[in-house]
Image 1 (cartoon, rainbow, N blue to C red):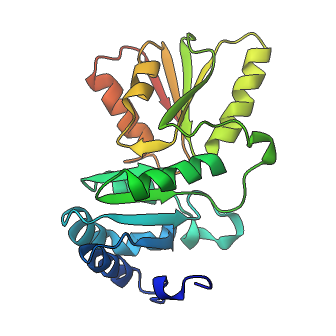
Image 2 (cartoon, rainbow, N blue to C red; image 1 turned 90 degrees about the vertical axis):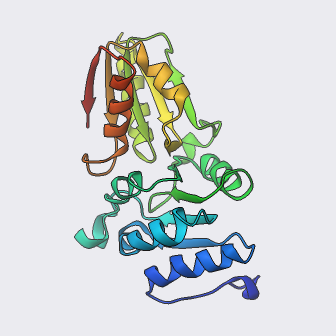
Length: 232
């Protein structure tokens, strides 16, 4: 807003209008970016479908405060957006865990992806000790890639899962950790990496019904997976 005043529009507390306005900008050849809290994106469900996805407009939605937000209160918890956007066709969803992931997701959204693109990120900041962890691919595998026990996660949950897997390995338990940076569509390399596992544990910071975990489970079993699936 300060550096590029001609590129910035404050539409107030009018999320439905914001998405339709972005659709109009896109129709005019621009690439709009709409910054919004996860909990308030819910107000724009109709516009995301009818003015975004079905119009095949290129819109980038930057979803802040995705996941738990603590003292902001019940109405601000960002735990519904993943389930909501899973139902929208022709939509790409990124949920980066690190600043590097976020940067690469934004680059892909602006210069490689088409149609409706959603990039969701949590409130707060990233722990500095993880600054060199990620390579920013759609899916990444950590620790023992031949292990028969697999944990799959995305976003801020990655940090807790990473620490948990390290502790398990220190105690002689072989585990593979898969981090999803893109959660819609589910990266095929992540499904392939989990397919040979005897058990898959999926951890996410959002509601279970319609979430990325349910989608991951469904696609595994549709492709003949015979192991156990646990959704946390």
